[in-house]
Structures are given as structure tokens and as C-alpha cells.
Image (cartoon, rainbow, N blue to C red; front, side, top):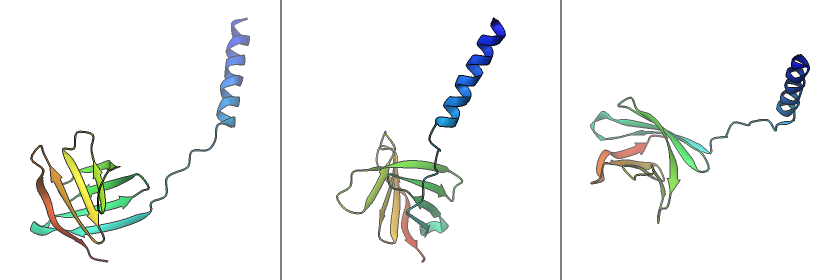
Length: 109
């Protein structure tokens, strides 16, 4: 009886996996490499509701899109990291005081 139950559970799990819709990777809507002051840089891959960032200091992160009056703004939940982008320019603010840690950034395209 134990073997039949285990076998039946395996069939149910297998059918569920086969019937699940395929997971599709999100398609980027844009990319940019921003050269900033002080030799810093930001690589950005934009999606419909977030941005993947690679900063020249070695950090990589995904930041969700946030409300903005002008341009595109991406911020973590605590608002302690904010990436701003408008046209071919960008900058990053960090910390409670909103210190600009990546400034004067321009996409060289």
C-alpha cells in the first residue's frame, strides 16, 4: 500500500509540473552604460517595472521602479538607495541624507 501511495503522489506531481505554464524570462526594454564623475560607472538594464544595476564599486542590485514627477526613478523600500534616469543622464543617491554617490553620469551611446 505504501508503494502505491508514493507512486500515485509521483504521478500527481509529474502531471502538475507538465501542466504548469512555462516560466518566461523578462525581456529588457533598454540598456545603458553611464560614465560618471570620479571615474565611476553604472551599467543599467531596464525592465518594465525595475532596473538591474552593476555599479563600478562591485555592487549589483535590482531596484523596483518608484513614483517620479519627471524621468524614471528606482528606489529600494527604505528609500536609502535611489537611481534616477532621464534621457541619457543618471545619478544615484544613498543614505538617509540622500547623498549623491554617483553623479554627472552620462550614457555614451
